[in-house]
Figure 1: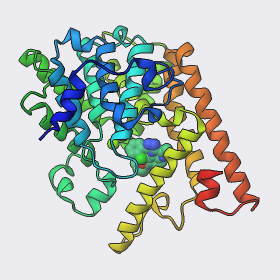
Figure 2: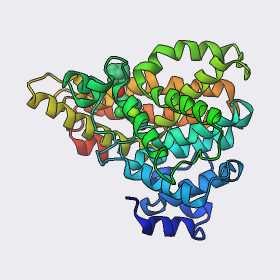
Figure 3: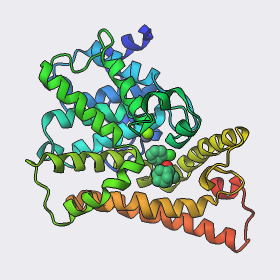
Figure 4: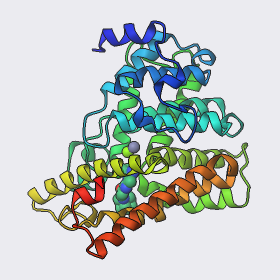
Length: 344
Ligand SMILES: Cc1nc2ccc(C(=O)N[C@]34C[C@H]5C[C@H](C[C@H](C5)C3)C4)cc2n2c(-c3ccccc3Cl)nnc12
Ligand SMILES: [Mg+2]
Ligand SMILES: [Zn+2]
């Protein structure tokens, strides 16, 4: 049951203008985690309106409100993979749609699906990971382990359930054919958020962006671009100011270490990055940012040098900050405690 109070508030006249949500709301320098939790659903409605999606696809306000509220309700409350993450990912997608002129790179249905998929890409996340789902023989792995990307298939399935709910389908005015195309695009985008999948295709992405060969008529090129941009949105906390990056790392390792504790209680040895007794967080983050995150935004910079330079610069600053913390720990200048790593 969707909270009616929410629908009333969301469908009545908007109480906030863009700048009221957070400073520079439509610029890459803005920090969506600074938007008040009580304003996030209204801010999502604003994004659909501001991108003219509400008008273009004739989405009733109550339908959009119900959809956003149900998406929010679909998220649980683990330290990181919660509604705040979903909102900040959808916000980065909005920034890309708005600042990178994606109407010139994607079809209208891909453009629309990208924002919807971003909002729903982690629905019903349990704070676990695919390796845990498979090794614990969970219900989700029973359903999806033969295809892989167990969690991501579940997030997609939950998204379809929301769209099938009475009065919640933001795609209700599309034809049968368009709706089926949209579901395929949303599935591809959500499956692309499995980092193991990203690692498999990133050579193809780099080949496409390096020779400035992007061909908007090439369906495979548009698919690779959507995968790149979705991963960029999923990791976008790393392109923000250091305090945000550091705070997010704290949440991620809270989630990782709780999972590691759970694996230990099941008599399993967690991976080093999930083991609170072994993980060297500054080192792990320097590696993650250098090997996985930075190349994502460098690939974007090859297509949009003027707009994405700021993202690459901020990632470099954040890497350098992790290196400074690592150096202090190595020099034994400071104790290796959460305070040192996450608060100083
Ligand atoms: C800051 C930051 N650090 C992160 C450090 C590590 C990993 C991580 O999953 N590593 C890998 C390392 C190899 C190859 C694959 C599969 C597994 C084996 C596990 C990935 C993710 C991290 N991450 C994410 C994120 C993105 C998508 C899903 C879940 C998450 Cl948590 N978003 N932000 C961050
Ligand atoms: Mg995910
Ligand atoms: Zn995510």
